[in-house]
Length: 280
Image (tube, rainbow, N blue to C red; front, side):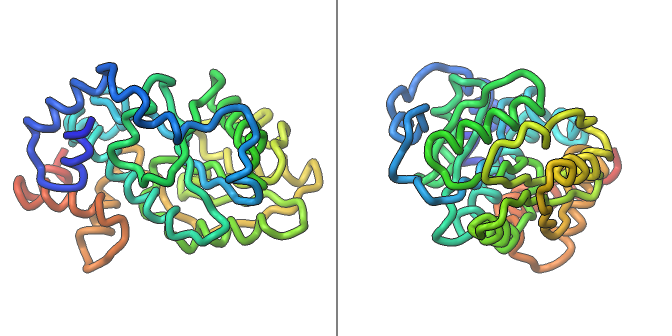
């Protein structure tokens, strides 16, 4: 995974990617990340802060971003996933003094893999639960239990979300009112949900992975009297059409958005041409 992280932030070598990702299941690096892992005990160092928590699956070839294959190989998709995490973590790190970055990850033994590409001040928290809604709810419960004043659960498919959007979410949750913050995506879902308390109702009877998720969540919030604050909309990169749109957005202009993702995609296009992404 060290080589995979280096690849995602540097030169493109498919041989290096294959070697890195196939070795990502190896045991090792025990103890390197232990001081970053949040336990069930309250932590005074995070009291009063808002957790900006990325829900993430370890970036292993064949296990992540499978809907981007093709046009990407399994190794490239895993490396692109690292880039998404780098860019999202970078934006979180610039979200203001009241925020703290966290990776809520799965599988449980993969914590050491994040040491290679997340900022050193990011905390780690293993995911719990089975279905997606349960994992979201339990992540919120765990983050608030250890001492965070509020939390935002963030997807790992939206590398173009800005530090300003994250900062806005944190500022809203610093207020006295009981609110839920939602960052909508173009496909009817959300890239962020923020709260001060783990409201079970927000995750009840939601048609996950459909275009109804955002609207249903807004309805659930209003059913329990929560004010809803809506952030700027962004888009998820979870299929080939979205990948092409991402390339158009990032490679078609001189933009500093998502620099790790931009660099990685530009290397592919410069080496193999636009058809590598657009023709498949």
